[in-house]
Length: 511
Image 1 (spheres, rainbow, N blue to C red):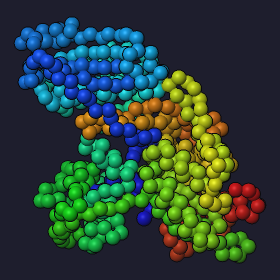
Image 2 (image 1 turned 180 degrees about the vertical axis):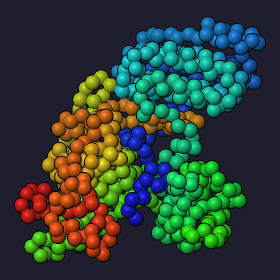
Image 3 (image 1 turned 180 degrees about the horizontal axis):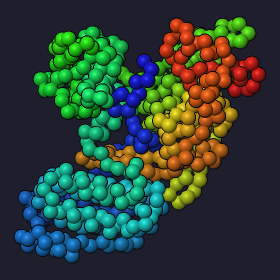
Image 4 (image 1 turned 60 degrees about the horizontal axis):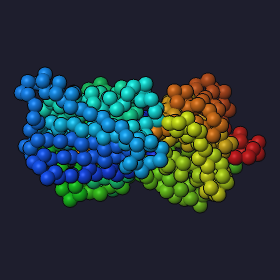
């Protein structure tokens, strides 16, 4: 069960390093405003601005010269931006209203992307963390992009223009993803899917798609699919040159439908065909176990090990359940493993922190686009347990993982063991746009409770998990590497964490 967080799965796309999220607001749908004449007007309303895109006829014709050059010249001349006093804003922070009129493209699919462009532009205008927009005129950027988009004939080309516009902000985390990509992202964040329950990954040397594991009780598990088998066909389509995410998309589908796969045995001696029904599969970002060990004074002790792979919507409740279960089994200390956890929902990260802390502790500080620093505090928090805690981190621990590690460390609740974290101190909001795509916007920066900078710096653990440190440990702990204990107990960083817990308990230090 351990170490699966890096694998691409049939059923989940784990939120990556650039996805620490605050919310999933639905977009404001554009209203279609018919005109008394033959003209059709499309009005998109956002907070603080209105945009009208118009056509001369229902067939999307644009009354301009036939040559592209004159079309663009005419469009550029026709674009108008009117700035007036605030008459439609619902945000007191905005002191102006902007109305922008553009002719829509003759290509229907490009017209839809034009609407998406306006939505994306407006949301960034309202919320992007840098109010200078990387020292450029953001209103003019919309005009420029509309001009470049007008002669295009495909949605893909038009989306390319939106992506190019967003790239000028100088923030790789502010981006747009397609409707299909957003569906995969929602699967990863919701923790629910419809599929067959396979973890798959591309073998680095050959590029072959290999089964890493099956979700227990899933259709793939019931069919007897094993780790190490190679996935060679899906519904009769060979998978040569297809990456793991593309294959995962083919395996997902509505519960009640089925998918046929061909698998090559681990030793390559034969190929078998399996028809798998798709089903509802519940994913948990939590795996846990109890590590029994003998203390230096000869007592039998229990350490609860909890691995958190992503901050999806069920992470806090799943962790609370896991810790309660281990408390009932008389666990005396805990290891929380955040290694290679790339983040996810910030609110969930804060909820997890509150499972380990009491009172009104500060969990994180945010810095908004105006440069105002504000604390986020617990309110009358009650920890599930007060047992000693070590948190494992490494260079793959990012964003919400860093918020959680910082909150537990800076409030004196946990010792950090491992390697310096990734260093992503930015928070994104995610908005589903009208066409089903999604816009990720960096809306704030954050600092640890001790006001330590995290972005591009990371968090340095109290104890480095290195070979030198292993060599300095006591002989009793080193003996575990040569014994028949489970692989987890031979994990060098887990061994260091256990040593820190034993030291903490023997010294009587408060947790």
